[in-house]
Image 1: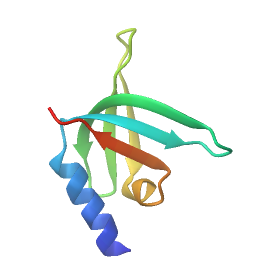
Image 2: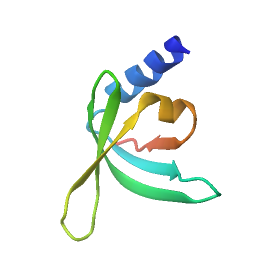
Image 3: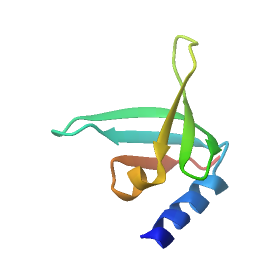
Length: 79
């Protein structure tokens, strides 16, 4: 498991600054879909700056284990 977390961390760190689509699983077959940019990658969490239509900026953070457990699914857009 530790090795898997480090692989996810490394992969996300390589894509800092990239546009992504983020799908979060909220349980009971509810999911939210956002688009944004990977802002930074820290040892325990990573942050994403969400795109919003109104000009307000919102930053969300997730654990790398959220990606492993598929609570969060990230799709990186190739620029």
